[in-house]
Image (cartoon, rainbow, N blue to C red; front, side, top):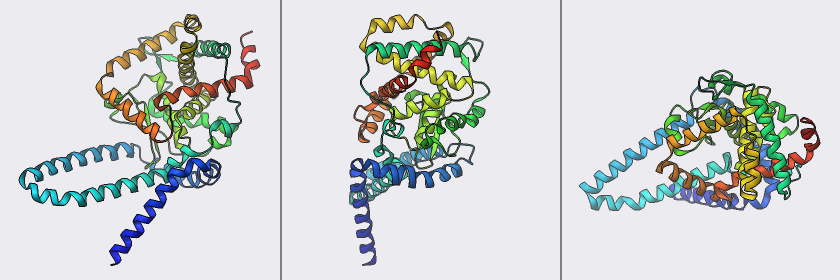
Length: 371
């Protein structure tokens, strides 16, 4: 009897939790004030510092262990089905019920540990940036500024023997100074402040490259995980992107903008160049859709170093392209849409709206730099 009451209580709790999770987008201001800036900040931040003590990625260890476990369970199921199909069939309903319960618990844990951040106020609302439709002329001006800035920064970064940009120090050292850009940004937007666990490189990054994924925030360990097999000019931007997720900014387009902001405010030139180059890539992609002629014209102003880095990026993508990447993109697209990012993977392009909003506020000072 006691067990039955416990099961009912668990069922009611899970049901209410799922209903609350699904209705969260209607209460953005409440989520922002009570959860994102309250419960999440004061619980996940110290938790991430705790998991950050470990020099390796706990998330990677968990994921690999789960994959091995599922393979083991699948093999056992096949053996049981072949040896005694009748007994196997009788266990299916109970196992199915436990699986549904487990998935419900995981979903609720995900929501309470991070997922509610998808329903917080937008970064435009938090920052007060004037996001509005932009003309092609504004987009071209932004792209031109970013090219000039990228060319200038490219002359200051280190190169390898192939003429491709390299980090100022090794990757582990880079992770150790990644927070400096957030400290600067927090002076403008306090919501980006606070100490969190340091980002971590994934040991199986070479294999991860086949998925086309550069980084992942793992809510259950509050770790910002980064693919360290990528070309170096991609890694600082990716790192600060995952750190934005760690700070509760779940939407991909906003995490991209925050990565650009914190990279360009960083005191070190390798971060500045990485953020500027990625911002340029997103801006040029938007310009190409709306004015291919202007896009082609702006591309002619790229410096030689920038071209070498972009060519290295193409070689990297070609080396790891394949069916695994296509499946990974579909899964990522489904995940984003399930979390109400209705543009799916294309929602990354909306980063440009925030950049244009910033451009409007500092346009005069940007243009005066090159007069």
